Image (tube, rainbow, N blue to C red; front, side):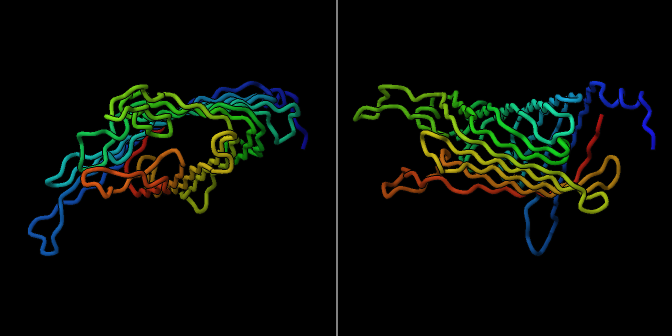
Length: 298
């Protein structure tokens, strides 16, 4: 079939694409004289996503800002946070050949949270705060993307990871891998803990999105990072799999799994000394989510 010359020009024309999405997932259970027992509860998860993307014959620039915040209230228990993240991603790619699937790529990722996090039921001592931690990844490498909207494999031999712990109490405790404070024999701070930790290492990511059945989409994203200097070969893992079920244009359901391992995030266990805690090392973190709610694209 003969291709119109004007169609070719149109295909090569630079394009900007913008879209936004906001949604809320709700769940509620109420008991009245229920002989099996139970606790009344209500949960809500608010989420938003904004994308601004550019592409032409050789360049592609993708920008995404996402946020999620979840709360849960059970009878006779304080309001608790179930989800809290704000994340920004920017991915700039250049391919010297318009027919190639390989891009020279530069990536930036920033992530933190909105409010204090606690190890419930203790709500007096926060274990995390806004920018405590905050994570910034910035680096360059090569990306294979047959279709940058659906599938991508990225390898960066040089990525800077910066960890921010801007709360001094958490920094003094050495939270999230920063250097802790130096104390004297009586426990007084001689040198305050560092609030910024920098690493340089290797980053590998893989992502894809596909429709497995009609109105059922799976999204996969895995990120692997290892630092050259401090602990080369000790890999930080961040792996997400989400299934989106589309009921109609406004009602959607989501089933998600999020697994993480970060050697800088240590756990604790009760000490032999009453009232104190000992470090128990890093452990695999896992979260699962199932919800139904409303979403609006604009």
